[in-house]
Amino acid sequence: MEIERQPLSDFRVRQLQARDMLRGDLSDEELERYVEDRVLLTTVEKAVAWGRGNSIYPLTFGLACCAIEMMTIVAPRADIARFGFEVLRATPRQADLIILSGRVSIKMAPVIRRLYDQMLEPKWAISMGACCSSMGVFNNYALVPSDKFMPIDVHVPGCPPRPEALLHGILRLRDKIQGHRREGWRERYDAVGTEEVLPQADGDSAAINVYQPGDTAGA
Amino acid sequence: MPDATGLELAAQELSEAIPGSILGTEFHRGRAVLLADPPQTHGVLERLRAKGYSFLASLHGVDYYPEEPRLGVLYELLDMQSVDRISVKARVATDAARIATVTDMWPGADHPEREVYDMFGVEFEGHPDLRRILMPEDYEGHPQRRDFPVGGEPVLFTYNEEQNYGKYQ
Image (cartoon, each protein chain N blue to C red):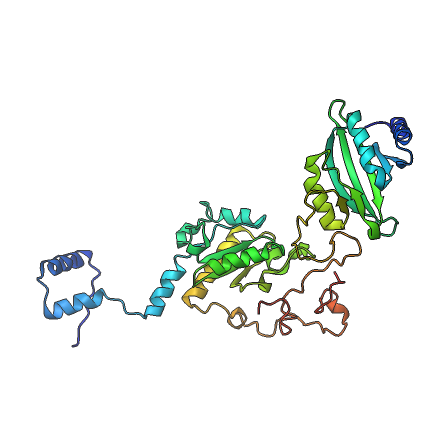
């Protein structure tokens, strides 16, 4: 059935239609039009992803100084409550997101892995700060990078990252959950071919800080 | 702090009480250090404690790498009545890194001694519970020793992306 759309910009018209609908006065073509104006079609996956992306529950979990910045994103200035991420759960069983905010020592790594394993699917992880991603200034015997023992969805660089940076990281995670293709900035900005020059591993002087596997005597 | 003269007097007194217990003294920038013989260190500390240095402010280890004996265990004592500090240093070799515990006099030395054991491998004889305190139980080596590799993990950057360094598998 072909339905001709009518502009419903007038609030009063819609109000009267709603009243007629409730009274049961709408019928046939008018009823069809009324329903079509008020129905959204989507897939279940998209709807679920939309819901998930807009209600991420982070785990209340701080590791080091980055945790101070992490606390700030709940405060009024950054305020992740605007996006629905403000429910910091105190148990991993209720959390969707673990933010590794700080350095991970090798003694802490099994604990974090356990917390991560206790979280229910679907679950995500953000590695916040230099220490957690690349161990930053503490690249020594005591620390372990988070990629070594659990999958990480978003890395937020900085030492420590500002709350805005973490907020941006969480929003990128939301894009990831909702399936938006926001990656590929090189293509968008016409920057293909600007990747960093790769030093060769065969004793090139440019690779002075490159660790070889099994090489623990360096640094 | 005892001044340089006071330090010498204290060293003399201790040497007479326990022969061979004091190997020397150091007085540098107003800090008085007694170099004690490791087997006699417990007795030296006991006497100093009876003298008034009743508070063990710190107990820590040092690795003086090229020198021998390599390891040092330092006791920082404080006399709280006269606000007077004195340090006792005992040098032990890495192959015989043993020294008597002071937890019988200062129960608070429990954790510092465990830390020195963890980081430098000095064994405190008579310690009630000598385990690693910071590193995992199955960790090998004593990471604060100078000959321990700085280590670190290879980190995944763009340039070593293909080798999958440091990536969660």
